[in-house]
Image (cartoon, rainbow, N blue to C red; front, side, top):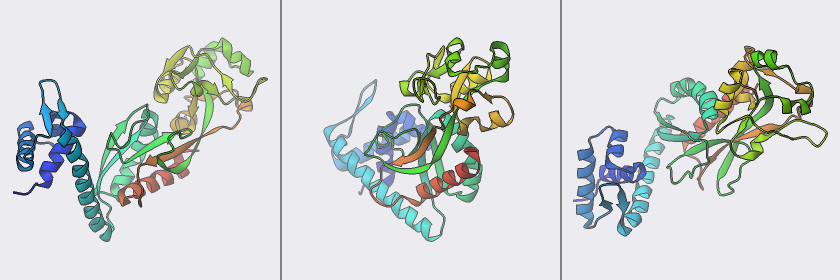
Length: 299
């Protein structure tokens, strides 16, 4: 009996998710069904692919070798299905997107309704992560990244830029006063990042240069937390336009020290591992993101 695609998918899912139960939940099957598929696959191959212990699953040497082939086969089948969909002018398939929490909430989520209406056959998997992930290891098709790119092994497509501004709530400024000089920030509660430290260099011109190093009173790992802190009147923050558009328009956050702003804009890229032409589902998604950013999010 020949190996089936269902058996290959079960094997890859278990490896990627780390357990039979997690794989079963992802595909809405029973754990026993996934386990039986793995057993059939190993019986057909005449070898053990995964060592099952009470705590985790580990790939055998044969499993490591077979995993690469299994991925290649499944990717080839997915590409073949997508080619058929392209002939019908309906891109299809699973699209795995990774982004930081602010990007996910303020760029990706707002455009999903229009994207899904236009491309109903694309199934989205959205993952938020504040740290840069390994796209291959996490089986991610595309990641949206803000700031200067550091990984030269990635292919990248520019989606636009977003300006940084120094912002605070009206309530905070009423209680603590409005800083009129950059140096006056030292007397205020400043909201900054835990890492990288470069994000705590604010784009402000002053006597010693065009970047001002702050000492945060409160640090957070992502910009959305800093936005919420600023809205709550906890201090002054440096935030990107794409995540504060509505706040600024509605007066929940106001800009301070605008005359000292050096005009710095953060680049926004899509990054991916592809040596050939991008899959249609990725291309149409990036086109949609870029169109949306150019008409709304970056104003």
